[in-house]
Length: 447
Image 1 (cartoon, rainbow, N blue to C red):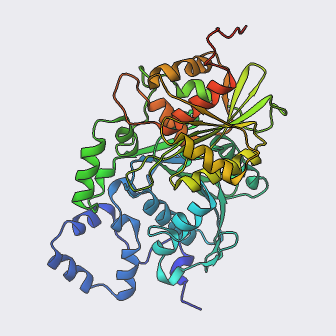
Image 2 (cartoon, rainbow, N blue to C red):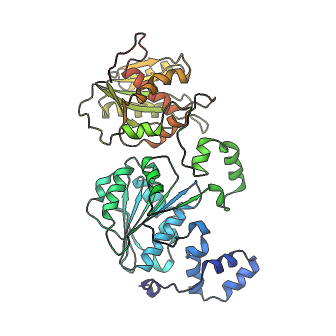
Image 3 (spheres, rainbow, N blue to C red):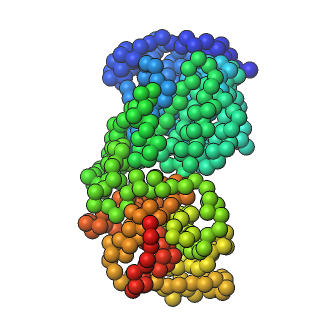
């Protein structure tokens, strides 16, 4: 059994302050080596696992009376690195505490938050390595502190447990972020002052905007380029490709973007009309699978847009975004799988390129599937405008949160010459079919 006395006291083995550590970090390599040579191996090792030394100023736990630490930062800022260190600090300084860790998916939980290059198992002090149960993601530390792991796809997992602390990674991407947050809030009931840290690239969701305005939230913002460890070629490539774009402002500079005034689709409208349950309208009149095919399959190929949409009376429902990169056989197989899963009526596909190939591939696998090929004669704006009108009339409801699709359709600016938005095209084909928007006679609707 390793010596864990250090971890049973909130007092660190090596006492420093941030200003002193910042001075040390700015010294020459020779001066730093002299500094470490005077330390005992135990103190040197402890220092290298101390966030106040290895982290940048923005990666430190802030002082003050906050309930939620919201870290809104660009990709590669070091959000996961920061979160992992803080979980280890909580576990070490508060023996027997209970910590929740939540990722967008189970894969992200195990591959990023726990076992990733910046995950807990890589950041933890070698004398404090927890027992890791890969089945349920539990981490049991030597001093009795425990981490319980959850994913953002199943809010009901959070009914029952209780915690002192919690870390949520990439909350803005969760499909059920509102439900996860509500359930977690009810779990934070242990100790004198439960605290939550959220590390995420920002998106303009209702929850993120409300957390920023909450007086009990301490918000830290940062760009990707604050991480000086990034390769110069990577930085140059990102700046060349994304500088000045909405995607770059959100993903690299961590801005919470308001809706594009020229955009056909608005995030606020989507949020207002969102529903959470697939079966709220228990019986749909029709369900369609729509496909915007990518004919080639190489690193520069577009993704194949795949959406599942339904209609009930005069309202439409976007049920699923299955957009993927892959060979024609792979995306055809995925489309057929969704067709049977949702008991759809038809697969609608854009047949400007490879139309016959698509139909033949589907027919070779399942000849009983009804398919409709549509030809895109109009430009993207003209095709999308009738569908955006349905959104403006509050007749389209997204089921759960479809972050990538919502980002794409809200970012689409018809005034610019943009690359093909695959998810947008598939969405437009789906609702065009469901609402018969190619009909030459206007559709009558009473609000």
